[in-house]
Length: 215
Ligand code: ADP
Image 1 (tube, rainbow, N blue to C red):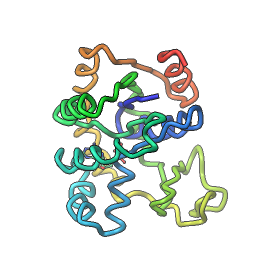
Image 2 (tube, rainbow, N blue to C red):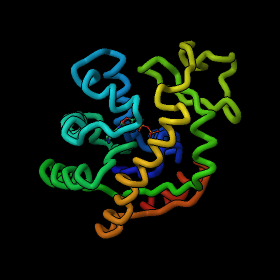
Image 3 (tube, rainbow, N blue to C red):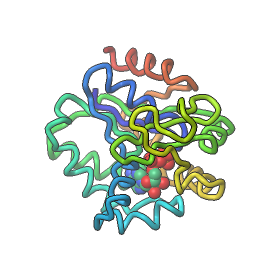
Image 4 (tube, rainbow, N blue to C red):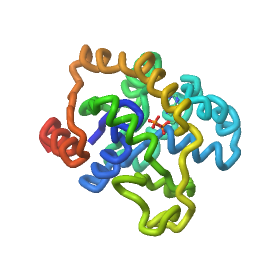
């Protein structure tokens, strides 16, 4: 599968991507995970991205395109990839289209995971993430807490609330999404690539995607 996953922060892009990777060995590519890894490792990229991310703003398009141009040409992408959190702006979508033509890759679909705003807000304020950047497992204090409070089930590292998951940064991220990313739905509709899924359970979303691409 070669898919773009669209949807507001908290729509479940990451969860759906993880389930899809189990089906056919496609890799999940999350620009958010890559950036958080870079911030924690203190790389040049991380230093440039940190301030934007803490404020809930988008990281500049040229930095993101630099990351993706390299990432999409790595060997593990040959089996397929699930783009989670990218593209996030119309210029990124246009640059991606140009890049894919240049490196001769064709996408199957752009999937818009459509979840009501109240569900999103509730999920984001209760979401917790493993602090180990190689793991980044996701929990929810209400619906999916770690077995031992504050400790990751998979790797034992502390489970934390992300720096951009304060009420203020969440509301900023949702506004940014509506302003900059929501227009991508129209972009991919025009490209004839859009599948919209209105569902709040990740299993239902995965099923709709499978029938949408006939796999
Ligand atoms: P969420 O989808 O829950 O907002 P992500 O983990 O996808 O979280 O992204 C976290 C932050 O990383 C964003 O708020 C933004 O600052 C930055 N980011 C991630 N992907 C992109 C992108 N494609 N373009 C610009 N900034 C990005």
